[in-house]
Length: 169
Image (cartoon, rainbow, N blue to C red; front, side):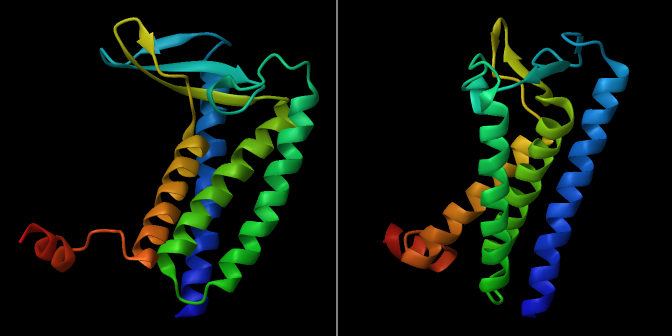
């Protein structure tokens, strides 16, 4: 069982990496930089390059941030590989780590080969736009969510079916 969940975590990371690279390649090949295609009243496809991190943090820092984020992401990726191997049959934690690993590596590939991360998902309400993001970013957020849920369950703070019923009484 331990080997299966380890393999599943690495397979999930590889799938995220491949899907992220594929979707970014489609956007780069189908759109011009800055181009936007309205899909629904609240969602657009865009082609945007982000040299910063989440929410364009350090976007205008002068270029050093590219290598800073590459080094951090690679260091975290090495740690994640170690953690995936260390957590026996803990599937939830391993899947969370797998999502984070795939997302981190997806954005590292962009930083190494493009000098910036391709963002292409643009959600908005009227003129208020959430910062554009990509599949790797979504995997990172989902993975962190799984790790947090795991942590809450370990502490006994996560509501479960029977515990939630007891708390209602």
